[in-house]
Length: 273
Ligand SMILES: [Cu+2]
Image 1 (cartoon, rainbow, N blue to C red):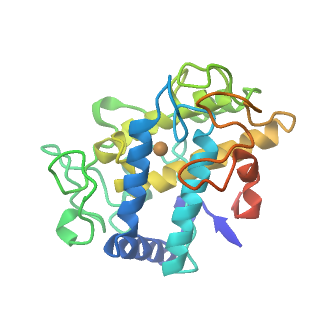
Image 2 (cartoon, helix red, strand yellow; image 1 turned 30 degrees about the horizontal axis):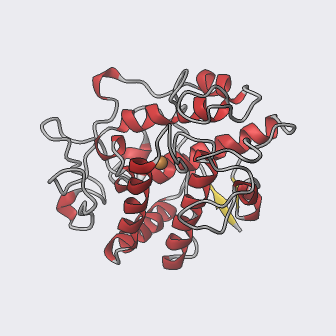
Image 3 (cartoon, rainbow, N blue to C red; image 1 turned 45 degrees about the horizontal axis):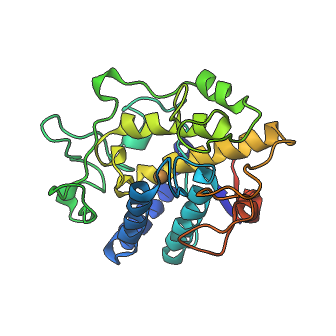
């Protein structure tokens, strides 16, 4: 059974294996397929049209399935690997061990955002950016630039306390748990973390930065936490909503899983706490 652990609790060997599996997926081309898929959904998900991966109720089940696919790909390289999660309410500084050279490497240099240490620095030759937003082929970050702050535990708490999963108009204007977690409204959790990391993470090609998976694994964990707190609240909408994935409707690009199929993560993995 896959156990997703807090990244701060990983052993040196677990970090090494996770990084090696990422590098192998990059080498064999499978990694970039995930970046391409994510970018295609970012581009096509719109508030007034069809929306599946983002700015819609299926943001959470879509990313749960997307991470499952990615985790299975990692495990095809090394069966011992599980996706770690990044609790950015605790590990909230560029000095956190997450950003050390033995794991994800640090922020980018001032001039052009180029990440220059760690396994994903361009100079290492293992991490060329192929699914590009511009001509540059090196991984970029600007951790906490401009004095930006990651969300606090109290802000997370305020969102977890919202009892309704999602509300009409089921997009970036919605009230309710999903849109506050996604961040288009209110204190802004998920979106703000993308912006705090900066560089590729602040673009549609955000999975180019491996921290994407650790960020989304924590967002996914917060969904599980919300379910525990609100056992009487379910996924919404239930049925008949144009352009939006209802509870029992299947999602692109897989066409074989509905939100209902993904509500219980314990069929696939558990968390360390
Ligand atoms: Cu996304």
